[in-house]
Image (cartoon, rainbow, N blue to C red; front, top):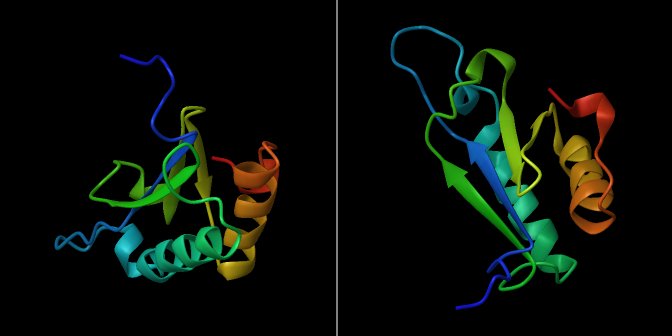
Length: 105
């Protein structure tokens, strides 16, 4: 068995929609952001085995700070507002390996 991870980076977008009135990522554009990130990674050819995987997730328990996403293996948590924020995270962190401090939570 290899010690090399299957993905270099694994990104999870919280798409949770709470039904109790509390803030939730799913109510703040998280699904569109996740789809945009996945499309952008495909365009840049950084998706797939040994590269980057963009996933949907249920509640990541940080909706109050959301919408949120987390990048592993670093464990870097981000919030975002629009696709330009997602593009910055993809370009800087997923391609360049540099954390986007202004979006980090």
